[in-house]
Amino acid sequence: MRPSRLRTASGWPRTAGVSAAILVGLLPAGAECQITPAQASQLRNAIGNRVEALTILGGDYGIAAANFRSTGKFTFGESADATVTVTKLGGAGDIGDPQPLGSLPVGWQPHLQGNMGWLDGTQHLHSGLVEGDITEIKTYGIEFGGGARFWVNDRLSFAPTLMGLYGHTSETYTANSAFMRENLAKATQLGLVDWTVDTWTFITGVDFQYVYTWDRTIFTLSSNPVYYHTESFKSSNANLNVKGDSSTWANIIDVDIPVGVQLFGHELRTGGYYRWTGLYGALSRGLNESSLNELHGRVVLDFLNQLWKVQWIGIGGSYVWGSHVTGWTVGADVTFRF
Amino acid sequence: MAAVSRPISLLALLTAALLLGGCWAAPVATVQPNGEARLIQGAIAVQSVKEAAIVSSMDRNAGTIVLRTPGSAENSNYKVGPKVSSLDNITVGEVVQATVTEELTVYVLRDGQLPGAGAPAVHARVLAVDPSYRLLKLQYPDGENETIKVPLGTKLEQMEAGDSVVIRPVEVIALRRKG
Image (cartoon, rainbow over all chains, first blue to last red; front, side, top):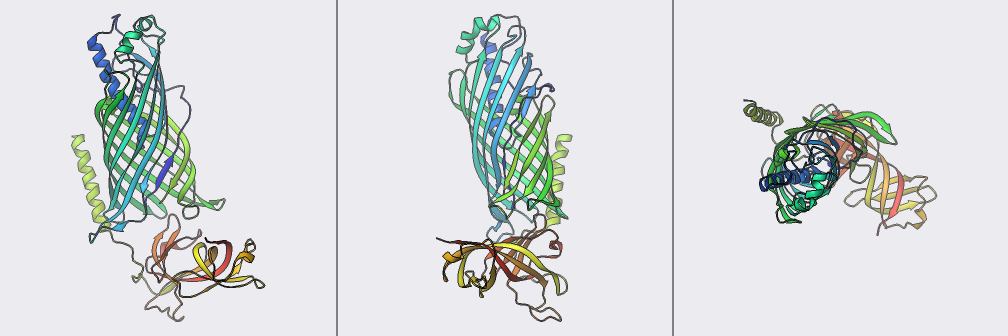
C-alpha cells in the first residue's frame, strides 16, 4: 500500500536569490536596432524550449511546486531578474493492496497520477536595448495518467506509467524601452512577444521503489526516470511552434517517522525527503539548469484507518535549489491511501 | 566514468534488494506463526465499524444490544453507549452501521491450543501487521478482512500473520440505520 499524495503549494517571491534562468529574455542585447531573421529563428527555438520547460515545471506532478526568483544570465547573455510562482494540486499513488499476478511470484496494483498546476512568472529585463521592459508568462497544465506497480518482493517494486499533459502558455510583453516601443509590432508579428500556445506532452517513466521499515520508521528509496515529448497544437502565431524532448531522473530518499505522541487522538508523525532531479534536453536548456535539489520537511497527524482514506494531514515545506535557482514551498500536506 | 558508474551502482543496489527481499507472496492468515504457543497481549482496546450488522435483539432497560455481522457464526452482545440516542428508532432484524469498541486478545496457538488454558474461542486470524501505522489486518472465518487501528503500546512487533485473535465486544458508540 503506497500513499497517494495531495499537495498544494503557494507563497510569495523571495527577495534574494542566486542566479537562475527560468523566464525567457526575449531579445538580444546587441547594438542592432532591428531583429534579424536569424535572431528571430534562434529566439523562437529558445521560446520553444522554455515553453516546454515551463509546461513541465508547472504541470507535472513530479517536479516541486515552489516560488523561484531568478537574477541570472540567460542563454543570450541578457541580464534577468525574474520571479516565478508555481502552484500545484496533484497526487500520485497506488490503489488497494497488491494482488497476485497470475501464478507469478509478483504482486501488482493499479497506479494513478494526476495534477493541476499553475505557473506565473514575471521578468524585468535589464539589458541595453530592452532595459526596463517586462515580460510575463502564465502557464497552466493538467496532467493525468497511470500504470501499474509490480512488487518483486515485499520491499522492492517498480511502476511503469503513461501520462498526458495539456498545457496552455501565454506571454505578455510590456515595452518601456525605446527599442521595443519601436519594434513591438514587428516582434509580435514574428511570434516573439505577446503570444499564446497550447501544447500536449506525452510522458512515460518508471518508478523504482525500495521500502524498508526499521522499528516503526519507514525509509523509502525511489529512482524515477521520466521521458517527456511536447508538441504545440495551437498557437497565436504561425511562426511559433513547440516540439521537443526532455527527460528527468529523480532520486529520492524519504523518511517517515512516528513520534509516539498523540494530538487530538491522532499520532504525530514527522519526516521528509531529499530529492535530486537531473534535467535533460529541452527542460534543461529551457531552465538553464542541469539538476534541481529539494529538501522537504513535514509535520503531520496520522489519520490512517480513522478518517476515510486519509493517511495524514499536516504541513510541509521544501527548499529547492540548483546551480542558478533557489525556491521554496510551504503548503498543506495531505496524503491518501486508497 | 561517473556516468557509467552511476547505472552500475543502481544495478548493484537493485540486485542486492532482490537478494535480500526474496519473492513476493500474498499474505496468508492460515499459516502457523513462529515461536511457542503463548499469549502475546490481551485487552487491546480498539474501535471498529460494522458496516452491515443485523440487530438480533435489544434490551432498552438493560442498555444492551445484540448484533450479528454477515458471515459471522455468532452474535455479539454490546453495551449501548451514552451517546447512542437513536435506539428507539431501531427495530430487531434491522440492518445498521454500528461503530463499536472491542477488546482484542492475540495468541500464538499450537493446534488451536494454549498450553494450560485449553483452546480459546478464536474469532479471527492476523493477516498482516503494519507496525508503523499501528494497523492490524484481520481475516475472519468467512474470508472477510478488516483492518483495525490499535493503540500505542500494542506489541505489534511480536505479532505476525497466523496469530489467533479473540474479540470481546464492549460497547456500541454510534448506531445508524442503513438504507
